[in-house]
Length: 315
Image (cartoon, rainbow, N blue to C red; front, side, top):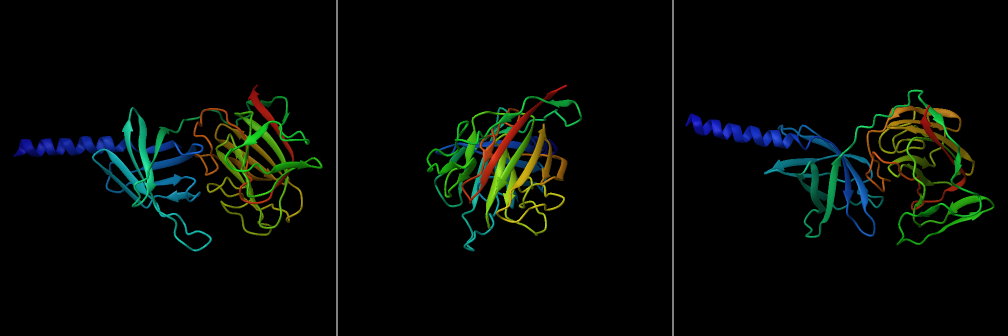
């Protein structure tokens, strides 16, 4: 009897130890069509009776608290209840299933009760050593918008009608349309953007194609994680410096490794905050690699009159 108990205890201990391997931050590539999407998962407490976690995806968009987590027989199953839509209806509840294979997450997701699923792969989010510690200097600035045409930019979603144009030196969209993405990729940089929005506008700038700085018509409102100059769904600005719709505004953004600083209309609103992981704008999950810029155009109107990137290099 003691021997049987010992074997059962050993088996349970081994299972819990294996379950703990799910813990940590994961960068996820969902193999969707017509293009792959990038998601983010953080798990803690796996291998204990009370696992918890957060999930960022295109489905819900926010940094969503996971409502249900189960690990059974080496398979992780989790889901969260997306917020109600503007119509007041509850969206379908997606459910994710995954197993560990060679240090990666391999799995599928789909709406609860549906037989249709989509495969995904997750890798551990990398530790990025670069810090904004005074050891970086500015290289030659690069003007990514030439004031004449869309040279250097392409549609993020080729299956959506491309309704961007340049009029009188200003880049503008005509929603609904696709986001646009820069052909050049960058690692550490300083970015200056001059932009203008209309009433009720909602746009954003994607850094390395992964981290969104929100553009929003929220003049006079309290700062928040979904407000102007926020690291979307993650870090709110210290103060809301938005101007009224129709006025030109500026962002000066500095990103070194995971260290982010944002100056909005001349006031520093994010001061060397940590970028923990992907936001919902992400088009790629390769956090250790350079990435492009994204200008969000699928929501509502935005205009750009300058977009200047200055790469940062070690002194």
